[in-house]
Image (cartoon, rainbow over all chains, first blue to last red; front, side):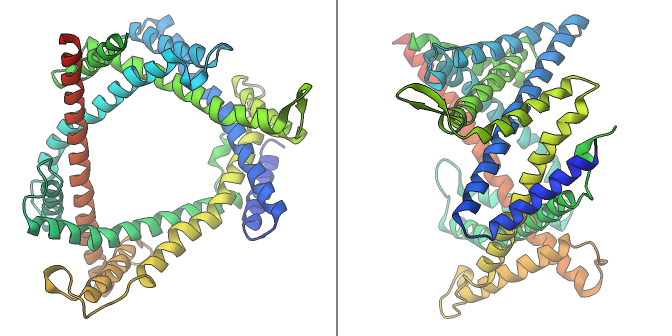
Length: 207
Length: 219
């Protein structure tokens, strides 16, 4: 009951969705939409678990007075401020003035600055990675340099760099990306089949 | 008022940049703030754009006499969703496996045909059927374009051979895998170059934001 029924549910719902894909009827499309809505609804309720986990970890930090626990108040304040501003009955939701401004002037600046910081760390990582000790790393280095010279803010330095970078993108890069996509696709299908057939059961956890 | 918001954004940008010196109080404030704000934002976003439309357009509909129950069967996923919360109880947490089983079953069932079509069949088709193999037109380095098209197919095959571990990479198989490694390395190099330049563009954009802020507060 605790393990067999969930396995049966996975099998039935999985096989149903596979068969549904090959049935060109209106009822099949409606069933597909309904099932998608199921995942959306269950996913949103699962999100509450994630939020609860964040709150619980934060409260534990505060109670234990761990190192840096004072910053947890800031996280909790941000979380509750956004939820209250976005979901209170008088709020305009995503268009609420304070809610949307917190998004534009707090979330976006911090996130994009964090991503821009990676420019510095990626440069130091590249220094270590690109010491061309082997032919393979030299190939990587040359390809990266050509691409960087192509997309510098001044524009491509020469027509040769432009042509070479176009070739890099349209021939070897295309071949590798396609192989990766095919590999990922086959891997995903194999994993999904293992889940539907009950071979992969890690999601059930331990009793 | 807008200048105040602009100032807040600029200060948080400076707080975040302060990490370049070392991990410090200002950076930690920005870091913890963005965790809370992002989590709250996505909660509101998902509820407003996903849950609420389903509740208000399918489960219930608003008519002349107010709200009325419409598609009652939407209560099933709602109840299943609520069962997820049994995870809070040690005794009843096993019940959460039912909604999880539905979720995983549906996601897996969707994955099998869609991934096969979109990632596998479409990519193979694009690699073989959609090339013109025109050997009269010249491409890069005056080499016929048809030769480069053939090179792409060989590259795809060699990369796939490199990913295949059920046979030892020796002989012609090993040689093909080696060509696959070089093809992959060129692609990774190109992606790396693009990523670095994208981050630098983002850095320039943040500096421009700070310049705009200084202009706004001084004018």
